[in-house]
Image (cartoon, rainbow, N blue to C red; front, side, top):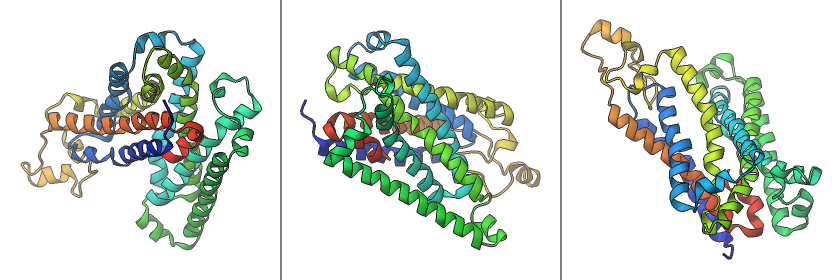
Length: 341
């Protein structure tokens, strides 16, 4: 198959569209806590869709995965676990820095580290198999396409510095009351630390894709069309992300006593404000005391599962299209992660 970078960019754009819109269906979830609907959505994002679609679109999925070395499967899974940590701390980044500053810093780090670390490791440790399929940073720097991409990563780093400076200036000049009014728990120092951790851990998804390239090659050898060969690595990678998120969500279910919500037809009064749109303005306990019939405790169970499944499936499609785009980039594949970010 002849690479078509323009088609690759289009697929990456579709992936970005899915990434930017997946949370919208969660707005339809009512009377469920965040940890409940996030885990249900995640079951589709990280387990059902990756396995089902890879099974349908590729040849001999289980045979391809079964022939991989333990090392390949472990590193693909392990980097997925680390990526899961990055995803979980993204919420803390928003909590301390706000949407615009937090997103800029976290995604800037993610783009820079996800793009640069594989070729740097390739140059320093050429025999380390995880990045064996990457071009080295020296090879990239010699090509025009590589130089353009490196310049783009440089812009990301400059953007992080500017955003950090803006955040520091904002914190130093704003009165304490105004800080709390704008962002309830605004903390520049905490936010930068969390955003740095979030960005670096999130970049591990790119490392996992590199570690799983042997799976892609085995799928191609099994007769899978080139455009679908990125799909078989996703079930292994996303299983790692599911592990992290599953543990965290179950811990929150236990801590907040919300585990009953998966099967319950009615929500407890203390959880009546839960849902995809956030907390209500009126405390449900106070409302019930004032008017016992004022608070609707019925959980729209079927709707909640449908909206969560739609959100989770949409999330998965960002990397469905990412893998398609990567197969089309040819010598520009080095830029795939930056484009996705």
